[in-house]
Image (cartoon, rainbow, N blue to C red; front, side, top):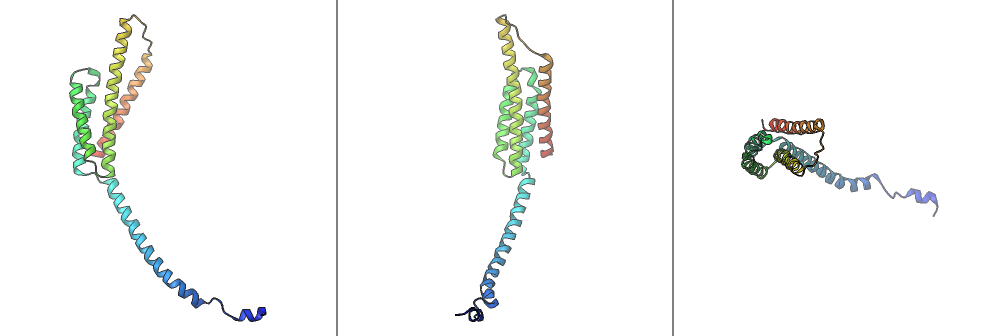
Length: 173
């Protein structure tokens, strides 16, 4: 067969393309519609999750924040009330974590936990430093310290607590 004879036969036509592409086009149309609806629904759920603070978490968060603020006031006093208020604050933080439902709820619960942990850590560090100083004095050893650096460290820790407190007040009010 010659090339001219081969070119006379139509191997693929527009009609053949249409027969194949029509069902594929209909299927793709439905896939696009369903995908679009799913994307819109996912976006709506995410918007609700990230901006909605549930009532239970809001109440538990406020109670926990109040307890931790009371605890923060007792940091420098070295009084026996610290442990009782600390246990109440721990319970409040755990209740807030249990009532967390949305993404924003979990964010508030984590910020409360972080604030509470920082307050506890500052108190623990201060107690350990006081015990170390006492032990050094009992053993007649020199305590090497830099009051300027210690003051800066203390002010930075207080600033960190203030930032956490402000952020929690913004989220809960």
